[in-house]
Amino acid sequence: MNILQTYQTFYFVGIGGIGMSALARYFNASGKNVLGYDKTNTKLTQNLMNEGIDIVFEDLIDERITSLQKEDTLVIYTPAIKTLGILDFFNQNQFEVLKRAKVLGLITENTDCIAIAGTHGKTTTSTLVAHLCKEADLPFSCFLGGISENFKSNFLYNGSTYSVVEADEYDRSFLNLSPDWAVVTSTDADHLDIYGDINHIEEGFRQFAALVPQDKQLFVRKGLEIGRGHQTYAVNEPADYYSDNLRMDHDKIYFDFHTPTETVKDFVWEIPGIHNVENATVALAILHNLGADFDTLKKAIANFKGIKRRYTKHIYQNGKIYIDDYAHHPTEINAVMSSIRTFYPDKKLLVAFQPHLFSRTRDFADGFAESLSKADELILLDIYPARELQENFEGITSSWLLDKVILNKKEVSTLSDAFEKIKEKDFDILLTVGAGNIDTLYDPICEWIQKI
Image (cartoon, one colour):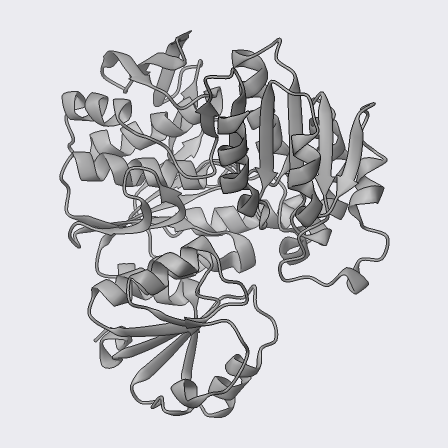
C-alpha cells in the first residue's frame, strides 16, 4: 500500500514554494487536512489560504503544531530550507518527514508518469504538455513549476491515468521519480552548489534518463548526449520529431511539425522565441504518441496562453510595452532578450534584474554581465539570497556584478527603491526579470504604465 494513504494530515514546511504548493493543492483537493509554514506571505500563499489551507509565517511551535499526532501526520519539506525550529520539532518528535520530491514520486507511482526535465524549458514544456492533455481530454493530473495562464494554477486534476510533472534537478530531486515518459530539454551548467561542475550535472541527467523503461518514450533535444537510446527533437533541423518553416505574423508564430512518417503544416501560437517552438515540438511529439489527433492539437496550441512570469507581456495604448519573466540564468535571459530584440529591434529597452542566489551570481557572473549588456539601461537589484547567507559569499554583491556589465546607463537598487527608479526612466519596453521577489513590482508597474 502507498504510505500516503495512511495519513489524514499533511504539514508543508515551505508551503509557498511553487513545487510545494502544487502538492498542497493535491492533498487539499483530496479532502486531507493541509497546513504549513512559509517565511513570506505572497500572492500564492494568499491563494492557498483562500482555498482553505492554514498557513503561518512565524517559526513558532504553537498549539496547531503540538496538537498534531505523528501517526496521522506526514511532514513534507523542501531542501531549500536548511534550519527551522518547526522542522526540528517534527524530527525530534519522530514524525515521518519526507522531501517534496519523494512525495511527488509516491503520488505518481501508480500513474503513467510524464516527467519533464532540463535546466531550462521544463516549466513551459510541462505546462504545455498538461494543457494539451486537458484539451485532448486525457485522464491526467499535473504538478507544475509555474502558474498556467489557462488553468490559473500549478495543479490540475482531470483523472489519474497519467501524471505530468516538472522533474527538478536541484538536489537531484528528479531521481525520486518513476517516469514512464520523459523529456530532457537541456543540461547546461546550473546548481553548481549541488553538482560542483558540468560533468556531474550531465551525469545526473543520464541517471534520470536511465529511469525511463523504453527508448521510444524518452525524448531528448537533438545534440545532447544522454547515454542511452532515445528519440530526438529539434527546430530547423531534421530529427525524429522536428519543426521548421517558422514565420512570424502580427506577434503570432507559424510552424510546420514533422513526425517520422508525416508532416502537419501551419501550427500557430503566440508564445515568442525559437526555444519555445522547440518546447512545443516535444510536447506535440508526446501527445502524438499518446494518440491525440492533430486537429485537437492544433486548436490546443493556438489557445495556449503560457505561464505567469514566462514572457508575460502587456502592450499599452500609450505605446509602452511591459514584459515580466522568471529567467534567472544567463541562457534564459539571453532567450528573453533575443525575443525582444527580434520583435522590437528599435525600441529602447530598460531592464530591471534581480539576481537569484549568491552562488549562481558568482558562478555565472560573466554570462550575466554579457546578457545584461544587451539592454539600453539596467537597474540591477540586490541579490535575492533564498537559502543562502551573504556572509558565506564575501564580495559577491550586485555592485560587484554591475562592474562587469558594459553599459553607460546602469545602477544598483534595493527592491524597495526600484519602482521609484523605474518611474524616472525613459523607455519603450520595460523588462523585469528574476526568480526572487521581484514579482512584487508587477502589479504597481502595470497600474502605473496604464495611467502614464
